[in-house]
Length: 143
Image (cartoon, rainbow, N blue to C red; front, side, top):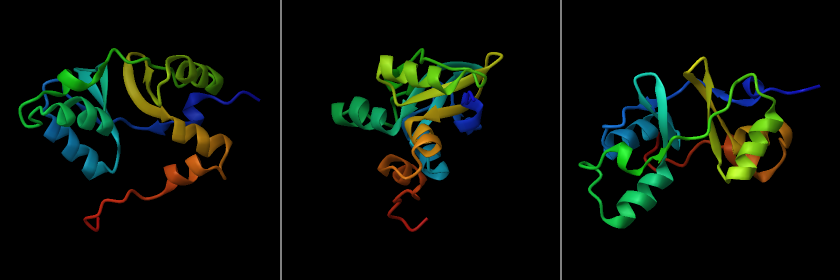
């Protein structure tokens, strides 16, 4: 039986505008306990920004996160996948392009995200990656 991306993806999208500051994006990530946001210009997915992007592409280079826009450090033009695509297609895309997450887009609109963690939870529920993906984030501020 074929399993589809819609069966394993994290539904819903947390998005920021390309001109948002890195601080705005980081605050949103913290509030939602997530490590990535879709960068959307109107309804078009134009990038993906991760907490690692903020750290490695901005903070480590000494950029001011209050003044630098999301557009500056996000991964532009990300690969996307349809919710109706077989999971095997998403796995192939991730493997071939060495990416850990794919925005899920339907009729031109972002509807979710599929990550390595989602795939691990669905296919190898007892794996370390699945356990880590299910764990509550360590926020260190008690939230």
